Length: 508
Image (cartoon, rainbow, N blue to C red; front, side, top):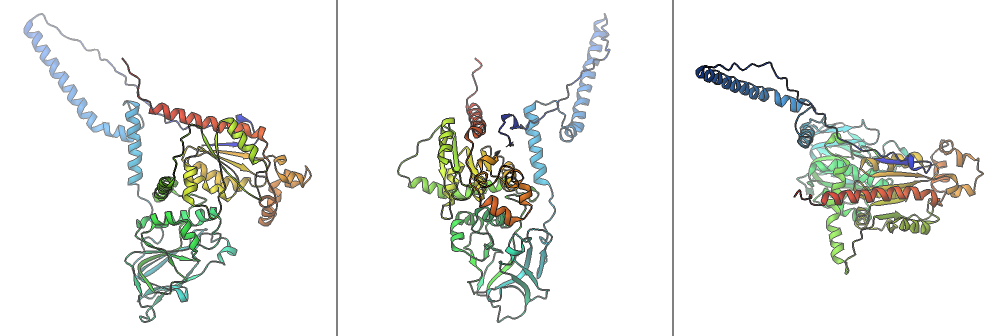
């Protein structure tokens, strides 16, 4: 569900509700022109009564038999039912669940790779993935992964998920996948009885959006099948990255990650996957029996132990507030809020409990997760920090301030993923007068009135003008309407939740 607002008009908030429709067939009883022959004679009357009872019994047996034959087809093959709606809904949900569980998914490319062979899937525009099965051995000093005692043609691969961006891919270490029969040079130093997954933490790593989109989510998709029985071999290894994502890595693998380039030992595996599968922007394709909600639950499980530890270490218990909580993701520099203090005051005036969050590269993810997972609304200007929407509970509100010239990116990278995650999305698109660019350009300049034309000049222009060249001064009178909508949504959800928790009223 989403709210997309361009003009600050409350009427432009289309609130869509999904309503499950139950179609019922009202039973029609067709009474026949039955005549009861009641005879004056008691014997004839008793005989007629016995015949009537036999006919009734025969009719009941026929109906029971017919229902046993036809009933299941009506229940399973049709949405039309005379059962109570609650039972129908339960039945339909159960059938949906069973159909999903029994649905045969198309096998993934290279999933049936034969022993002593290498299979590479290069069909995806974002990534290449190769699977090697057999006696697999690493050779870090030659940047190779070798298949021992085999004869297969060599393959080259850069295990990073931005295949179409040549400038970035050229910075990623290239691996050679090849066969080898040199027993002395490929002697095993460490023998593993579990598979390996090889990927790079180079490229755009350091930007939280790319860390999740290009790394963590693809790693979840690729390695989840191994149920933690997998070793991660990392190219462009960074200690800080491993530390930052230790809570997540712990739930994906039972083994410490290996720095492929610096560990000169020969590691031997029965199988190795080189490269990660990626589905889209902060997305998971349900066709693989995984959804973004599975990833959200996985994040819950990943951070729960650390959050519990933080809570135990706190000397004083924080009071629980009944006010809706709004978290503002603060920015410094480009696209920063010039009137952030006034924004905080407005949010409090409307009725929110406000928390300012200023994440940086040293911010512990578990603390961010704790803050946002307990918030009802997340508010921020378009930028990489909006990736933290993944930490919000489904049903919460995400308000993204869409700065000039960022409409497409704001929707593609954060708006659309937010809606798929079940968040209420409000896009607050600023007017030219709310951008610092209005103080640099004339009112009729294309920078202000036609950002699409400016963006068409190329990425470097977009980055210089809109991403790095503006700050935002919010029109608080205009913004008030959007915050009020968010507040009412949150309060309405809380009231509905509390109503559902109340015990049923006594009928006496």
